[in-house]
Length: 566
Image 1 (cartoon, rainbow, N blue to C red):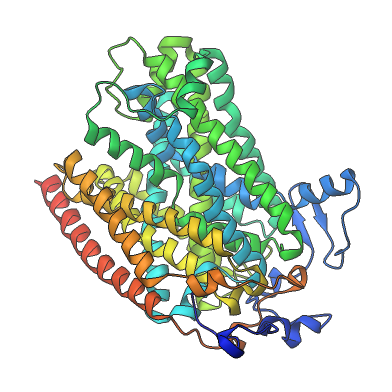
Image 2 (cartoon, rainbow, N blue to C red; image 1 turned 180 degrees about the vertical axis):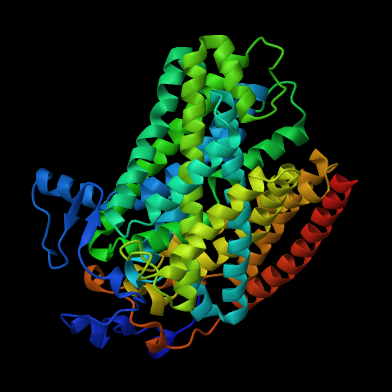
């Protein structure tokens, strides 16, 4: 991957043992190592919703009680980012799958479990070890072009995503009979107020209340009691729905992937973990936190597909999905008003979590990139720019939803397109950073993780290309989609073999000594990153793809805007 000093070779080209540069670092031997943290508020005690860990408390966790108390203090970043992923867009996608195709697509959720874990675990390591956000690392290690691109594109995509969250809020409010204007304004003010208390603990506790609120989906599923034998079969055994148009089914599968693996998640979890002051010593507990979050999000997704399938089975609405509001009404017809109310509340709850997390990821990225104070430990008076970005995004999104004549469908379309364009760059940079010895030292990826991650990235890139192409060219057929998948997979296999992408880093035995105490030094103390030839080719290809795809997206959005106006 990213090149650094190569180990000397002995006779016959045999590699001699060397002490990695990161083990010689002076900051490792210091009792107070200098780190890359850009905000002093990111240093100190870990203060979570359910407990705290003193900064000097670095001893081993002996006994189950001590371990559980430690986990209680650490839990939060992984759980919030995963539950936030079941947002308004996810509600629409999962219920569409259930209403149109029953439980036949449940298996896609099982396949996404390792993808979710691998992506977010790498982000977890980057946050705990480096002490800075994702955008900052891209800016420093890959230059101004990629840094500026990552921040600007994230800002635009997140702003549009927040609009979709408020669309979800309006669906829930409409079903409950709450006036749209008043409800949206109250929701926006509540989101801003919760994040602006100057207390990290209060914010996280508020998020945990919303996380528990997402569990309202479970009693709905229990009440509608879908056939569990069929649910289990469709979850573990892949298959396609009978009678479904292949192109439509493939697009829905891609939408399920897209709503479950989103660029904002990478930026949010890394920065939120830094803000919570979690270091590498508690990596095992952070991984458990992530697994808990994945379990909750999968349970929620399965529940939505299953109870929607039951609610619409044998009705005129089966196969004719419109929106999440109509799903609430269908649930009411099947099981009564109470279940519809619970679904509407769960939809609003999910939209509020999503809006909060997506806005926060943007504020973190901008603060990290431009070196401004950016921490929930600080009050708005201490970090006015950080909170203005957060509040501004929420206010603009709420205003757009309330503004008469706003093309909400066009904005949703733009979110899909931009997400498809941004996802390849986000995942490629994630893999490169996790193989950068200067950044992760003994925490960098090993051989098999690189192999699996490379395969995951290849699939995600191909799916994002299909999704982007389908939005730009609505008549794209199943044959063209299969050609993209087959041809792209073949080219990727040839490219990985020819370039031996990551072969040097992957074949090298990584010395893991001292990793519990190892932190990345300040960014200006790192040796400049030197890209290998294969990596330069990858980034050059990525830049070409982004230019072409972004151009097509802009043209398509302009065309749709003109059509809407006419």
